Image (tube, rainbow, N blue to C red):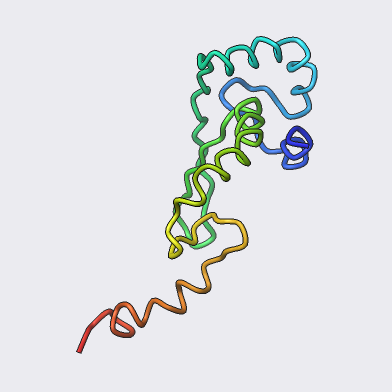
Length: 121
């Protein structure tokens, strides 16, 4: 399922140039070696490729593009990390959390800052 998610997301290749279409044959040739390195704690993720994309209002947004192999590993580890770390997160934490979005903290912000503009009377 994790492999299918990486393939469905497509995305640009990382610094190694490996595309999503080339991932399956690459894994058949190198997957055992990668798995062994992970189990031994010796796996080192590749450098992230920096890409700048234009913003609609001007300027650029910088993206970091991991390799497809690193994306696959991230997808495989995500449920493990989620189970380990999510219970430690503050109830006030909303960023990148399942089932949460930015609306509740944005709505609550005025009560913390004393109103619009952040001035307290």
